[in-house]
Image (cartoon, rainbow, N blue to C red):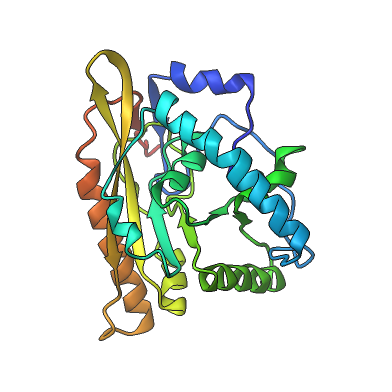
Length: 272
């Protein structure tokens, strides 16, 4: 959800070329964290008044203003089609995006549909940091579980947030590729959630575009949807169809990128 800040963050801006082998599994974030195990003892949902107060404080009073100023002043962020989400303010939904910015990907989704609360499915890394790891759940981090019992609690949390008319943010590419300007292939596993809960699906595509008086690009985010499954298909085919709609739309939007900050080159596999 929120990355750690280390001196290594500077490396991202200095890398000009990155060589990759596996578009599904390669990870190029510079942040290295040892994740804790998210088992049946992890508390995903706590309806207590104290937790509601801490969520409001960290999410609304602290995080949202920081996200606003960072996206506007540092990322030069612009949102296209924001009005699409306003029509769904009285319902919960899922929104899928491309994963291309360590810090920005934590901040930008919160600018898409203010004042709706966003909850983000994240890697356990995001709740494992010494200090921030205790705060990120209040910011909306929902870490991926390990084991059947933990998964049951995980899905129950998602269902409750949707019933509360919140938005669930998912980065289906799973791994961060800084400044990548295309859409990597991703599985249809996470598209089971909107099918099960019968709610709309949206996507947002972050693109990197030229600025008139600066070499640093601006980020333009395109929102699209809603997408719905084809109910004439069986559940497995519906999930695949929903994924294909989102993937094709994001690929089309990604063509609007016209700046390549980091060049990605696939390694040649030699047959010895």
